[in-house]
Length: 247
Image (cartoon, rainbow, N blue to C red; front, side, top):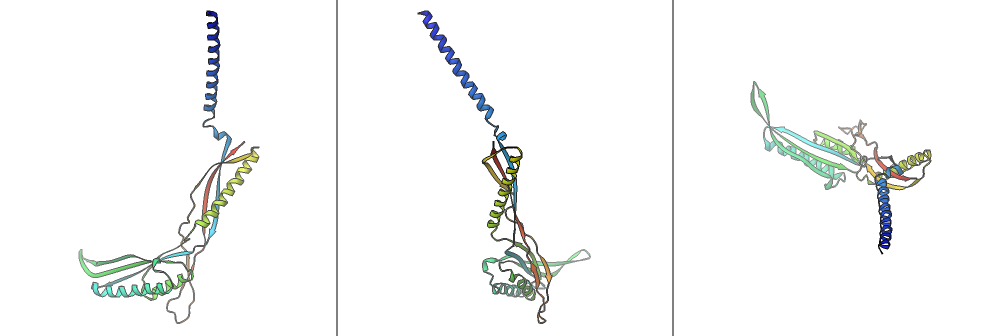
C-alpha cells in the first residue's frame, strides 16, 4: 500500500513539474514577444503638397481725423467711414463680412520746453472687410481712398475652406509613404503585410500670404488709379507617418 502511494505521488509530482515548466516556457515566450513588434514593422514618413489659389482677401480700412474739438472731428470721421461702409456694401459684400475693429477718441499733446500742451483730439475708426470676389479687391482699395480712408493695411490672402486641398495633400502624402515603403521592402527582401498605425502632423491650413501690388493705368477722369492685386498661389502641405507590418 505504501509503495502504491509512493508511485502515485511520484507520478503526480512529475506531471506537476511538466505542467509548471510549460507555463514558465509560455510566459517567457510571451515576455520575449511583448515590445518587440518593431522587428516586424517599418515606419515611413511621407509628404504631399497641393498648390491652391486663395479665394478670400482680408483688408483693413481706417479713417483717422484730427481737430480741435471732438464734435467737429467726430462728424467728419463718421461721415467718411459711413461712406466707405456704404461703398463696400455696394460692391455686394455682405454685412457679415464687415467688422468694426476699433473706434477711439484720444486727446493730442505736444511738448514745449518740457511742458505738455493740449493740441486737440484724434478719432480713429477701423473696419475689416472680407472680399470673396477677387475683382472687387482693386475697386475697394481705390474707392476707399477717394472717400477718405487714410489707413489701409492687413491685406492678406487665404483659402476660405482648405479641407478639400488638405485631403488631396494627405492622399499624396500617403501615396508617397507607400511608394517609399515598397521600395525599402524590395531592397530588404521583405513583404508589406498591412498598415498598423498612421499619424499626420504639420501642414494643414495654409498661412496667410501677402500679394504684390502694382500700379495700373486708369481712365483720365479717375483721380486715383486702381492697384492691380495678384493673389498668387499657396501650398497646402500634409506630413504623414505610416507604420507597416512586414514579413
